[in-house]
Length: 235
Image (cartoon, rainbow, N blue to C red; front, side):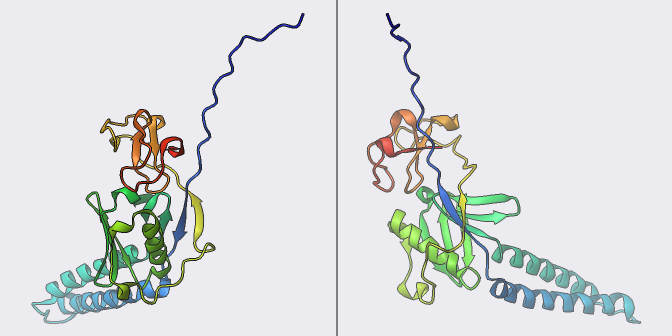
């Protein structure tokens, strides 16, 4: 007589669905113009100050001011060049700017407004501001606006003229990467306000990235009204 197996099969955990984002690098020619001019002015002032203070006989009294001012302007040029040329990521993980090996990221659910300020697109929310120079990041900005319009359209606060001249967003744009290392632990469930202490307890909305405790996942997302329930993604 064949033995009947009474062992219960273990429930398999649902596989994690990969989330993706696109990485864009700045237009090197555009991002370097402002910093180059600023750097040239700083270097000129610094050189004039060194001559006036240490090489000229007699020294000029304002030489130290030229040295100090030139150094400040040169430092600002280096900082400006680094910021405007930083790579940008846009996708399921919101918008992120690379700062060396670190990422400054805003999930779509945390974005409160996307505005044109001067010559920059400014993405604000949760006490953070991400600024993208239009001249250096036209393609990235086109994708920011496309993704925002699909996920959180209410945050867009732009005049039509602000987007004139932007390229069309195409599927072949950017470098496609898997979203990794999102900081979820420490956030609160958007439905119950329960603190999420373990990543495995979190579930996220696939559209806006809003975070929920797996015991309190609603049928629809409280931020973007997207369908949740079984569609909520594991972190």
